[in-house]
Length: 156
Image (tube, rainbow, N blue to C red; front, side, top):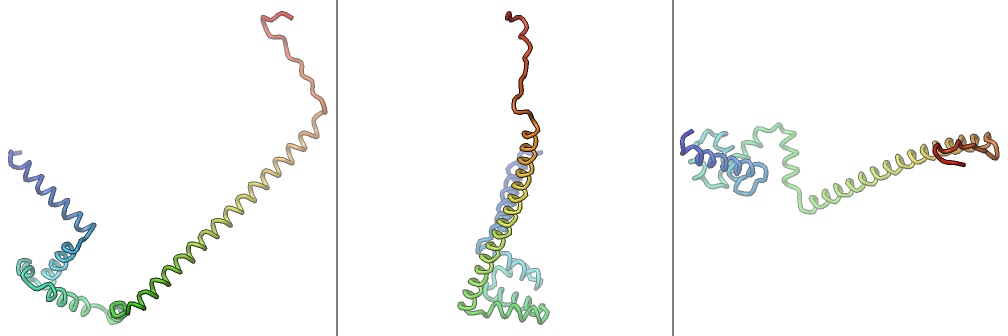
């Protein structure tokens, strides 16, 4: 490896890391670059030329082409989503939050029922074990005497 390749390779690696971070955590500039690349690929236009175009022009033409390629049902769903009022969005958000809360309560109820069944099984097992111990205790004599042998080396 020549001397110059070390810093150059580091530059490439650094740029690759930045590109990966931009894909994973897109900021506005990363989103704009992605949409300009899509326009360039879609309309076979060199990227430097796309970069010189107004962003509104790029996005409008790109999205018109995207919607034009959609099946009618998908396009109708997209239109319904994009034309919602703020009140409709808030209502949908409230309904989604309510659904989430209902699901959480249901999951907690199921968990509580499972815990109760497990506790009941454990109590039943403990009861059977206690019954067995009581039966064993009743079968033993009242007094038990044990003779311990003398400890070796100890005089009595």
